[in-house]
Image (cartoon, rainbow, N blue to C red; front, side, top):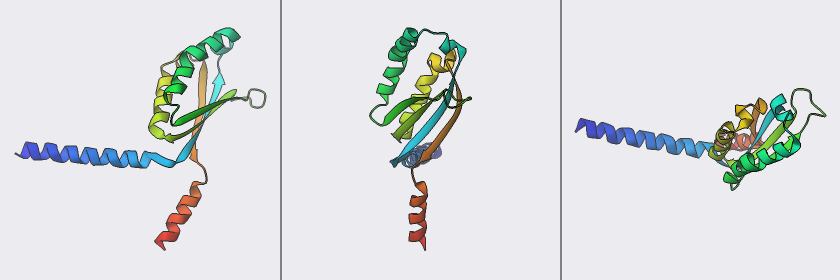
Length: 140
């Protein structure tokens, strides 16, 4: 009986914890994520046709898989920055899909060869301070 009670209590606690995590990590206000990257010599040594074929066969399907909640835009910056040749701006309302996006990219040559070094990842939400201001007004 104690084992059954402990098991039920454990399932309840885990279920409640997962629900709270999902509630916290999903938001109506989208996340904006900047992924700063630097192209490696392995990427640059590919022909333009090889790069296009790789992108179409390996990357586009990943973007489509998370496309309902996650939008990815790609940018070149090698003309303007010495440490970051490229960057992605990712907008998502579902943080789990963002994490899936990165995990799927990790399974490709983007990370594996690597074709790109990930310089930094920056996550934010637009005007988040306004939400906190509203919260503090209500608490007064």
